[in-house]
Picture 1 (spheres, helix red, strand yellow):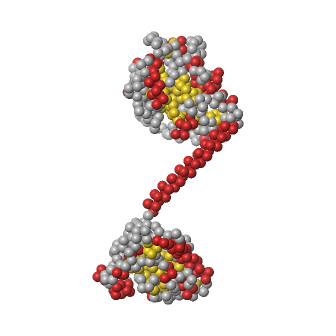
Picture 2 (cartoon, rainbow, N blue to C red):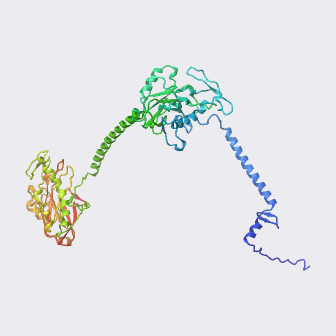
Picture 3 (tube, rainbow, N blue to C red):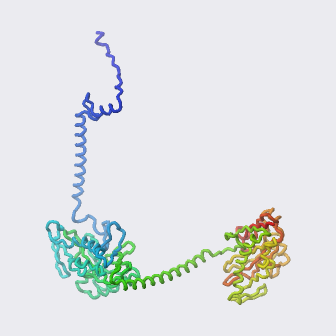
Length: 594
């Protein structure tokens, strides 16, 4: 009894440790269990059966959905039409031949009339386009429904249920394949067609009562000649150069077989064998060697024109070249005349653009703020120059002398030129006429003259100050001691005090001093020239015309500390040239080496 109730002891044995290749071999085929890729034959059969049934149900489900969906569609009639559809109700205008498909953005028709290969290239493109129009039968290889095409005219009766109007492209002489579509004659044909829009019917301009104002005059005259006739029931076509030069170069144009698309081709209802009507535009004498921009438009009351979006129109370029053919002389002369014309137009255009840019830059760069300027400027044109030189070395100070000479030469040109008669010597009691200006006599600036090298050779350099030109600006001077600002230097206040209430108080005062305490100690004494002036007299203002001489104040530094860089700030003082709470100022550095 004890043996029956005894629990059999079981032990876990780890799987044998197999190598990588041995494990993979057993995974492929396990001979002990009969498993292939980890599954037995029955397991593989079950899972394959499951997926066959699963995918069959999926296919059946989607097939049923598609069947229901196709029941809602008519393969001949679109569900959404005209304005309800994506393409809308405004047909586009297309042209043939078009350039190679590798360059889809190009609309240029370019060829050499005397090059057979160049001509045949475009003729082949047109042949391929018109191939459908020439297939008339219903046999093997023919277009389905080609047998439905019948000849139509403006006097034809209604078409049958399956009938469509034929387009007799072989009657478009001289735009025929036998003539290579007239490309060899240098008078190429370009074919136009309207895009197909289901059930679209044109609203025609068949009378002269409501013609649009932008319709070309020659087309208006053509409509007038056909008004009241069946031939007036057309979607009219016009082609013209886009720009004045293109209008001149495009030459006369023919429209073949008629100037538009007859109304009996519409509406398009997707009948088998339907052909879009064509108009062949024959450019009789386009100027050779010239790129011509051409725009063609379709005219109907329900065709709306928009050049930007190319609605109701098409754009292409035409360039006919004759290379080295028989018209070389004529072509060269025409090209030479055109080249001269282009050069003249370009030069005139550039001059006008330059003048406009000059005026614009003058307005943009014109300063409306009064500023104090320091001369001489630095070698790099810096407005805050570092004037450093050695007294004993004339090569170090002569560049500064030359820069001052260059500045004052502008004064000399006016004082000795054709405008010298307009200059008058001014003071506070002088009244000048509107065509006169006050003179600035630079010879009164002694010893700061060119003959003395502006005192640079004596270690007492002269620095010239002037205000920039601001049109119609008048100074509001500090002309009494009551209103002098607290920040004005004491020496300038002392110079103004004796003149209080006098006419020569009406000046834009000038002061110069060191920036730091050390600079103030090193700057030494200064003299303002012409003496006894201490600024710019107000009778020089306002600046309203040319010629004009800006007044100058020369500051001579009589004994600056040698071998020391001195930072100097000069200020102009008037009530209406305060900037940021302070008077306008000019800064520079002065260093005189022994």
